Image 1 (cartoon, rainbow, N blue to C red):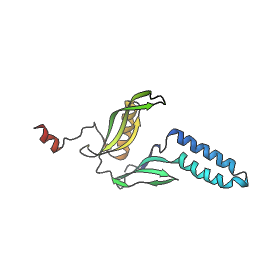
Image 2 (image 1 turned 180 degrees about the horizontal axis):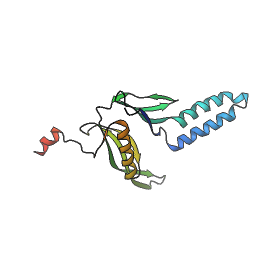
Image 3 (image 1 turned 45 degrees about the vertical axis):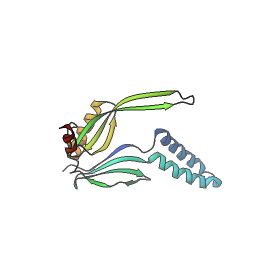
Image 4 (image 1 turned 45 degrees about the horizontal axis):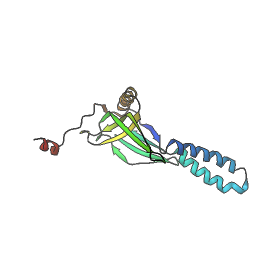
Length: 171
């Protein structure tokens, strides 16, 4: 039987918030040296741990054929178990992303990027759970094949079944 595994996906917060969390941890160490700032040290410690170590991940239990998409806060993983039998496929999808930023003078800057996202899919490929994002297709495919092998799922090309409602509109 394949072993169970836990996969870190990403930090829960942005890079700036995570760095701010580490900064609060450093401040808390400094605040513990003075008795008058001990309260602030505890507050900075709690905020720092929350910002720096909160993350999102997925845990796969191969023995019971289930997975949990979770959020880890204060080293406690929260999420609901779902059946892995209902999601037998793994696939890579190309996603074009676009972000527009406006300056104070209302000038806009638009950035476009292409990323490759790995998903676990149900049998009809209509429902999917995000697993991980990559900048190159090769890395995404390698990861998806490894994930499929470790979780007992199949690596497939994304091909959603056409619903009955769509078929009736085409006729």
